[in-house]
Length: 523
Image 1 (spheres, rainbow, N blue to C red):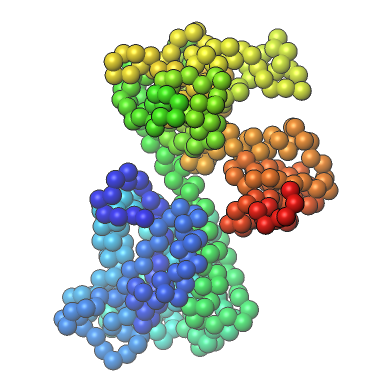
Image 2 (image 1 turned 30 degrees about the vertical axis):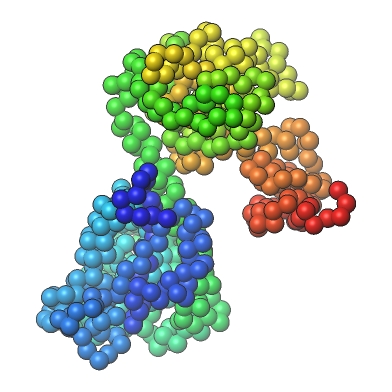
């Protein structure tokens, strides 16, 4: 839930939904929202639904016509009286609403927003994005009015709002693309869904063929999907809205990762390099005790070490296992955590494999890869002993710690990672460098859960093509096992759990059968 003035604000990516003629901000939520909102939650994006025109005040001009006035603002700034006083929907969608969302809800900052819509709203989405592509990550549409200067709806709107259809070309997606000689660099694709049983298609109100032709001339990719048997209704939208949310979600996630990488590169880590950093960390003071949020000091990296800023952190059962006092190597006080996505803040003497600004995943069981290391060179194990001795004692390779509490007392390291801290120090060989385009909140799972599951399939069980695989427990590791088994070519993958709510995810990742073991009479 995103609330005004909420704590722990982040930059939430957003999809703008623009509705069509006669609609307001509620139509989409009531008729297509159930699927859209679930898809948005899955993709980690907010969905914002502005109204289609000004309303709610007797001073707002209106006429007795469904395709003009209230409910039919066409997402333009009207310049002709009487509409010029209130009908500024273009500014509202492109300036006023984005600023409000950024200021009060931390939604769509850094232009982290996409846009889509239906019919008149599809026209609005296309023209708004094409006119200013730098402000939008992606654009799509359902049954859009693609060439309004050549259809009755558009001509009527532009005559009344501008006094001229010709002026309306500045808000006509086909006309805007026709002016270009090159594709829009910001948009690798424009997704459009159109029902072939849409009566407005046959009445020449929509004209998607004109848009596709104009796109072809300038080289802009447009994916027009003609959906057999579908009309112009919200049932059509509900049927394919998940595809559009996914279309935008993937692009928003990629842009988010790029923004994060850019900010990290611009971060003045030089101001902290070589100096102790004071930051927050969750400290485990003792077994079965709640974690304590404390201010700690993180010392600079020594030779062969790397200090990183932790951006995203996941919780693994091993952390809980240690906190409960079951881990024979569990030491207290310590900083737990070993599944994280991090950015290199500074490096110690002799470090060559990573540099400041690199994105890394900390590794609990790293390999030195030295030719002289019989463990790293063996195909039978990856249990490299280079730092294992000190790591099990909660220490860095030189036998000391890099964490101290507010009283200057030492805090032990955990699994060589200790990622439940804003900053931590790792051995160089514990840093796995990754692409900056991969979102760190997802990359962190490769630190343990995903890699454990994939390794169980590929390295331990060595699953072969056409194998049958049973997976007991559908947590992060179990789901990764299913993915690995599918990638290995297993023909039957049986997912077993006592929580049937996990089965949908298991099937989506490759499970062919599901078993609720709590319902079985025999083990």
